[in-house]
Image 1 (cartoon, rainbow, N blue to C red):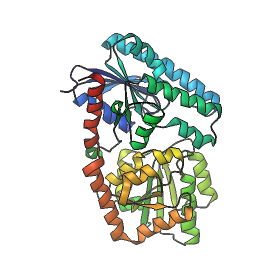
Image 2 (image 1 turned 30 degrees about the vertical axis):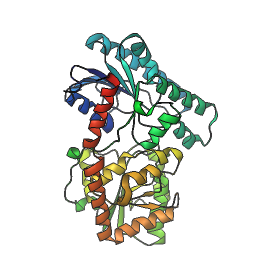
Image 3 (image 1 turned 90 degrees about the vertical axis):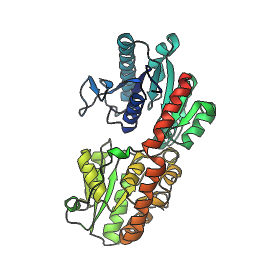
Length: 398
C-alpha cells in the first residue's frame, strides 16, 4: 500500500465528519492507501459523540458555539483553536507523531493550532483549500476594510506554512500561485467529485410531487450567497406572470437564512408551490433527486461563487438531472452542456430557463445524460482519489 504505516490527522472546523462528504471521501481514500487516519471536527446535534470509530477512521469531535454576530465569531474561532490544539496533543500523545496534519478550511486559522506540532516534530502541514474566505468577506460585506486584510493575512500564513496545497479547481490553483506564492509543483487539484457507489439511482416517486405535474429540486445551504431569495422571485414569476400552477419546488437544506426564506415564501404567497423541508435524510434526498424534472443552482453571481465548484452541481449531474444556474465560471466548467445558464441575477430569465427545460423533455433528457456521462467518465471521485494519493506521496517524498 502506498501510504502504509503513515499517520494522518485531518482537522476540519466548519462541518462534522462523516457529514462533510469531501473530507470523508478523503479519509476513506487515505485509509485504503494504508494510512492510519484520525479526524478532528466539531460536534453537532446530529453528531453528538465526542469520539467514535467509523469504518476504521478515528473521529474526535469538540464543542463549537454558534456564531451570529461579529463577536461570536471570535468566540467560535478561539474555542475551535483551543479544542483543535487539545485534541492534536491527545492524538500525538496516544498515537505517536503524525506524519501529516491535513487542515481543511474555512477558516484559515488551523495553522495556529497545528504550529507547535509541525515546528517541533517531523510532521508536515498540508492545506486543503475548500473556500476562498477573502472573496466570501467581500460577498458578505461588499467592501474590503480591516476585516478583509486580516482574513487575507491568515490565508497567506496558511499558504506559507503548508508544504503542499490541495485545491478544488483551477481557479483556486491560480489563487494558490498568485496570492499564496506556491510553486505549481506544490499544488494538486483534487475536485470534489461524487462517489458514484453512494448515489442511489432509482425510479421516480410520484408521491414526492404531491399531485403536481413537475418537480424542481434544490439541495444546499440556506445562506446569503446561495440566492434562494432570487429563486423565490423566479417562482413568483412562474406562478403569477406565466400562470403555471403545475410545478412544485422542493428546496432542501438548512442554514442561517432558512427562517427568513420561509417568511419570504409566505409573504410572496408561494407556500402552495414551494416546500422547505430543512435538512433531510439521505433516502428522502435521493427520492427528490430521482423524481425531479430539473434541478437548480441560483447561487448569487460574485467573485467567490464564480471561482468555486459547487458540490450540488456534481450531485445533480450524478443523478442525471438537467440543471439551470446563473452564468458562473466554475459552474460552467463542471456542467457544460448539462445546464442552461441564465443571465446573472435576471430572475425572469432564470424562470424562463426552468420552463424551457420542463417543456422540452427530450432535450432535458439529453442534458441529464450528458451530465451523468461527464461525471462517470471525468469527474467522479474515482478520478480524484489517485490525485489525492499523489499529493501525499509528493509531500512525504515517497
